[in-house]
Length: 619
View (cartoon, rainbow, N blue to C red):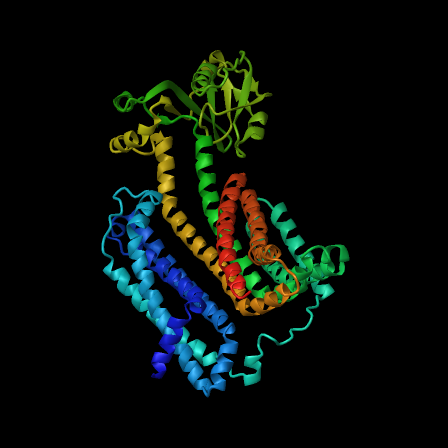
């Protein structure tokens, strides 16, 4: 048997040992290949919108490729960490450190090529489904038909063969030479009782607390100013949380006899401080990566939600037409298209007169026009007596010139001056700022306006689903600055954000699944040690039910501790985002964090099942 055959058979005969590393590598290749399928799709090389999607995909592929390098490198390092004893046994049989490095290089090359080919094949199997999902998410008019992605296959294969080759050389080169006795007894070496530094423990609480307080209290543009300092403070606090604060809390629990001696808590807590100390870097990495995933996706969805929400609030009517002259032809065309699409509407017409007061132009509407448009959207009419004037502020807005208008005086041609002393809130007219409403009689006595708009609004009663198609037909004949169709504007906005959301969601999922893989590797690093430990404890009377309970709690702590920290970080970050946009993102935050938590729970049950089965197999 040659040395190459030995390396190949070593991989083939130890499927369980190599499975986790192989599957994580396969997933990484598949994600990159999927992005390449999008990036080189013929439909994404046409107009400006599609080309921008393609550009986003290319950038995302680069991000995923760089991240893949570090992820696979970490996975390989964790994989080798669990093989110290195996290397020691091979050295007893006469293998030199140089040969071990060559063996690791060949094994990694074999797994890398196999994962690359498998990832590409698996990507091809799901390509049609993924393209169908992307077609709907990206809101592409032309669709994304299936094609055989020769260019994507070549790029992916060459890229990852090079990546695995570099990692194989790097890992085999840095593989340290240890004494034989250290390798053989690596799982029996005492780690010493972990001790927490009180100063660093208090510092962790102060850093996290101060970071949270600042992030939750700042508003508006101050959120951007405080962002970098808060990120630095919370990141350092997170590291100290896992390295110091967690060890301190576990130490306090162990010193509490009522907790430590309760049922199986002794088994759980006895080595929990060791595990927290050993896994601190992994927990820190997972928490930060997951926080980035939560915050990135939450920010993208939150920004889109804010824009669409503000658009809906600012435009109470489904269709509006504004022009400087009374264009009956265009209004008739709009009515005709709405009737042909079986869209039932209510219509209102009016003239909006604007007057200059100082440096600002202010709308002054008469009572009849205002009530006509307010009734159209379901608001109660108002009554304005002669000699009175009312300031209207747009409902739900944080802008306007209400205070300025309350101080201004409106001069009539009769010489009479009107001053407002009342403010109401309404969505009747889509004015950019606050405006006046006077009686019809007083309105007739106003001087010639600076300029005026002929304004028509249609409020849809039924058949709203056909508005987008009607809008597309109307915009071919009517300028976009005159015609506003709410559904079409929201559709266009979603279309513009679709590619960014899709890319962000994909990268977020990659980061999150990678974080879960880090935990999986860390868990399996201690598998052999756990087998020996629980085999000894079972001889002392531990039941199989109690064993399952201990393992479930142990794995749950490993999986959910960094995720819970990440969820808290993400919730604070999304709250700060709400303060930046002055828009409540509680629903978006709950959905994003809830989905990721659900994924982690599913991942936990799968890993718990296989890990528990491995432990019980040796009992």
